[in-house]
Length: 111
Length: 154
Image 1 (cartoon, chains in turn brown, purple):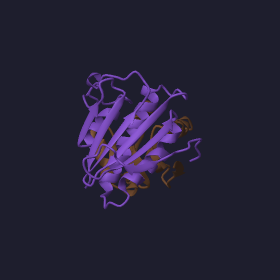
Image 2 (tube, rainbow over the protein chains, first blue to last red):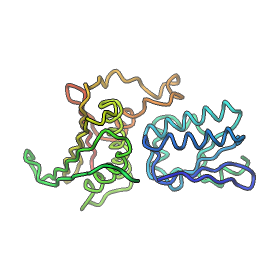
Image 3 (cartoon, one colour):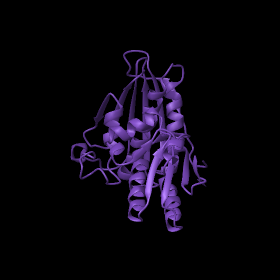
Image 4 (cartoon, rainbow over the protein chains, first blue to last red):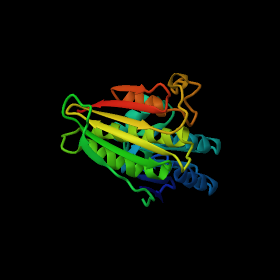
């Protein structure tokens, strides 16, 4: 369980969520994104291709992160959600709040 | 993940079962760092010996994580002197999960709907809503400190 951060060739910050995004590690993700924003990053993609499950605290952390990036004039995109993960966003209507792409490649295209 | 947790799981026939059911019980301290390990352990026991869809596994993981999180953070207020008890009744066609904390309980009817436009970009408040959406039945005891979630096997 953890997060890895890379930068694609166009300068987009890509954060990969490995394992779970839950109450026990949500603050780590928030801190990581906060540090990236403070370092001047404005385009951030969170990749869930290697994520098991997300709880409501994880969803809440994404809401906070999205707000923080918007306030800084940036943009957050999400990608790599499997059918089950995507259902959480649909059930909570958070799919209307986030820009969600099928794959990281699609999210990065034109970012 | 490292954890100070010592998990004990007891598999035994449920004494009050009308049919052959298996009972799994687990007691965990009020520490959110224990949740992932507890979920992993209980879900493994719930699904052992059954063919299960990925979605059933996923739903079990999410709702148990939610219930434990609520019990530890809201029920027990992360008081390390208090415990959370998990009881899983494993039936041929369903799983019934009880999660009980040592807190005063709450009124589930008083929890606001998190999908209204004014609630949508608020960080918290989706846990119970998600549980209700992901399982087949949800009940609380009178005190409001114990939730019972029933999920049909698929």
